[in-house]
Length: 178
Image 1 (spheres, rainbow, N blue to C red):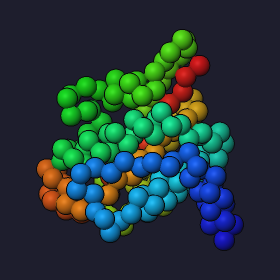
Image 2: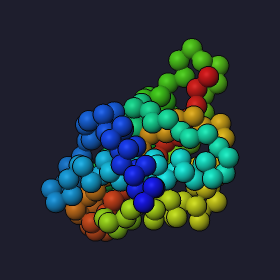
Image 3: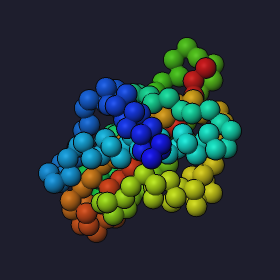
């Protein structure tokens, strides 16, 4: 019960920073953007809870990293591929740098977790999938991360890799600049 109350508080506080959620062409009308925003907030909450359990600082939601994550989720959904690389073949760090630049800082680092699943995937199931993957688990437990961007996109009939199935694609982009 306390976890649910904390999620609601986090959701209420964070919704202000996520007014606009882009949807790819073909996104289903029966899965409103509010459901995807709720999934995004729950993913953020669960990742931060997982980090706290391991003695790590929680991550701040970054609008820049969220924009990078949203663009990538939408691109994968629209073009029917699933990869950390962009559709044009560029690496994920180059894509993220367009949204989350180094600027005048001396240190910059980013990471990324992806998943695609049935349309009714929830944050708990997403976290379980990532925890059971050594590379994704390592990303979530990387101590240097300070910020995160989260995007969840629902598509009624996703092309290509997704076999015209109804799917939800989640991208989390992690970062630090100092």
